[in-house]
Amino acid sequence: MRLSWYETSKLCTALRKHVLRVDLCVFIDEEKAFADENYLNSTIKSILTAAIIKGLDIIGILTPKNPSIGIKAVQMAKQQQMDLVVVPGQTYICSEGMELYIYNMQQPLKPGLAFADACRTAHSYNGFVVASNITKRQAQILDKLQGSDSAPDAVEIFNSKIGGYRDLNIDYPKFVSSGATSATDLETTDVFTLLDRKTAEEMNLILPEEGVNFVPKYLKPKPGGLSNGKSIL
Image (tube, rainbow, N blue to C red; front, top):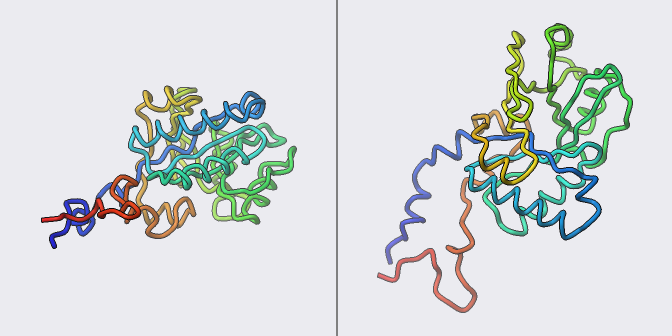
């Protein structure tokens, strides 16, 4: 029995799964979303669908105060068997006014922390921290903190929603983001970061080999029937 075209294609090296399309900054307004569970579920599903249409491999879902909506998005992507890795996160304003995106936290960070304390606390819970809207002066602070637990893991140098490229002469991983606030925003904004899989794994944004052997639902065997992934010739 011959292998299907899809099974054959999996024996080849897929470039998209080694160089990943990443957008870590997609916002969901929790004030509106929490008010109606159906609205929230619909919003999450439409954003995840838009991410797949856009060809993203990793998407960061951000809310202002609590990562729970992002965590819900993670669960939905798994339940729907989507070919997409979702990273839950929250935005955070430090006592000095610096803005952070903090990912992979199960609980929100205590408000009002200083920049260094916020980074250090997030790292103690295996969080991933991106500093955004960095000024030249703030960049000098980051340069001095580099390599310590008090430093962010990366910086955002461009956000399509806000505009304004940040020309930061510091040695940090750099991301560009859509800043999308809706599925339409996400689908029509042609902004994402290309990230090597190995780097994404080191950042704990994706698990080793995650998504490499993904099989779409329509190609999976149906109970009591012939496998859609096999040729009958």
